[in-house]
Amino acid sequence: MYSGVMFTKADKKFLKTNFVTKDDLKVQKTEILDAVDDKLLNQKVEILDAVDNRLIKQKEQILEAVDGKLVKLKEGIVKDVGEYIADSIVPMFDKQDKRISRIEKKFDLPLLAD
Image (cartoon, rainbow, N blue to C red; front, top):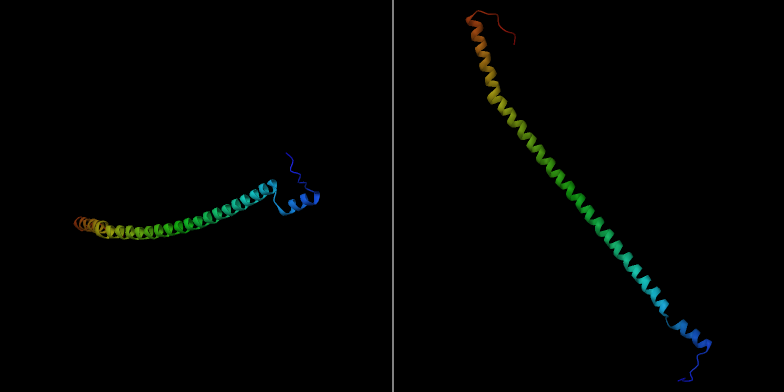
């Protein structure tokens, strides 16, 4: 049934300028979703950058700690080797030198050059 209400061109123009169409809503929805996606992407990038920076700092701290421990370990090894040489090897050489001296004296041999 026809109600008899007629829209004029001016009415249609008024409605189009003051109300949103379905296509306008789709465009707005797309724009909003794009803006949200961009914002989320930027947040993800910021988070990943922060995590990356934190990991780089942790890596540097770990390397410094390892380097420090390696230096201490090296110093300990050098000290232990030095002590071993002083306590074990040097006395063996001294003992050998004494034996050689006794042999030289006993058989009246010329002294070996030091």
